[in-house]
Image: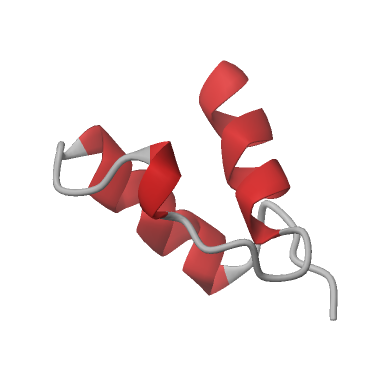
Length: 43
């Protein structure tokens, strides 16, 4: 399985991080999930 910027779980983590509820450290090392979320945060 591979996550993309369009994956709902990526969007959910981005929303939670922007709201201050979660941090990048809370994103699990599941396939490439953390990498995609990190990349989106850098944009």
